[in-house]
Image 1 (cartoon, rainbow, N blue to C red):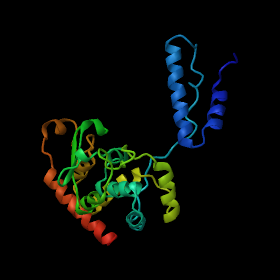
Image 2: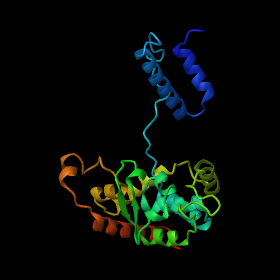
Image 3: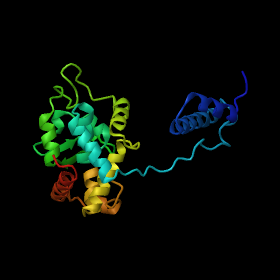
Length: 244
């Protein structure tokens, strides 16, 4: 067997993976594996130990402008399908893509979403109020018997984001953005309209923000009424931005 070298591995990684983020992920995975092999005595040293990740990635900072958000929202309303309905809910609620894509009818209350802990990133149940746009949209969706974005023939969570996002970018002619950027845009708009940061974090279900540590232990206020007011103000912003 030929000797494993870091340079050879980096060459293989770059030849088998295309994107910079994928190469970084592959590099990290191999480095962790080789550390494990060294601890178990299968290898004398980690061949990737002297090397750093192939690419230095800048933090994600993309926030859609008002015109970009208007274009996306208008496109989604004029081209209704499961994907564009999910995008509309992401815009209106600020929740994570997986949480909305996996939404079940049992998660929807009269005027809110109640996401169980097994569906949230921090494993805590999350209740978020819904505004008029979101409620109107949900009333129009047929979905499957269990999943909101399932179908009568395939009652499973939606799974086709890559192709659908690419089509949306092509048809709107917008610069590249990810669906997670909608969440960052949501938070930014709330800052603009005067929503207190701790209320925005409650809507987003952040637990490591302004209310954390000792404050999180002793402050058990749900801020639900404050969230309802913030959601109503956000709805007004969207209504003015992209009127029907």
